[in-house]
Length: 166
Ligand SMILES: Nc1ncnc2c1ncn2[C@@H]1O[C@H](COP(=O)(O)OP(=O)(O)OP(=O)(O)O)[C@@H](O)[C@H]1O
Ligand SMILES: [Mg+2]
Image (cartoon, rainbow, N blue to C red):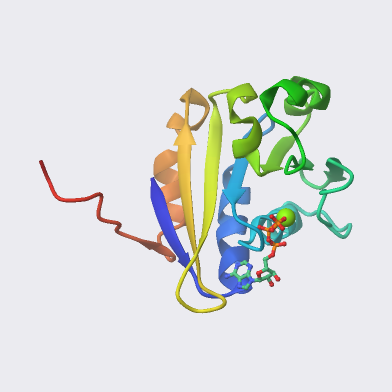
């Protein structure tokens, strides 16, 4: 897991742009975190870094927005879904066939998502603009890119203790 400190929207933009450099068609980014934690801010900056010029708005009511940049960006928010069962209606497999897919509140439907994912969690820090952004690559799709990801995020990353040894 890579743990990053963001102290501003600009930092989050830098982190999002670093991830955007490494994504390929078919990638799924599972965004998790409370209200106002920065999921949409990340998605907006991520899409911008991929050359999307359209305004990226929260898909809370539209469920899925599609943008075209260097890659297609599918942006979903499943906050209002009742769980993995309902997610069948989203056609996740079809979305994944076409571009990069970002899902806000992905934890609501995690059971229905493929294992090959980049999980990105957003937590609050001490100051109003402080956020802890944790990135965890899963599956073979990310195996070959995890070192490059850690390198690209070095500017913001910090060592997080995982508790006392043994
Ligand atoms: N370091 C930071 N990174 C991201 N956003 C920040 C940061 N500091 C302050 N903010 C502000 O926090 C808010 C984040 O809102 P955003 O809509 O991205 O949250 P969200 O996680 O998508 O919430 P929701 O679950 O309601 O969709 C924005 O108003 C943004 O300007
Ligand atoms: Mg949002």
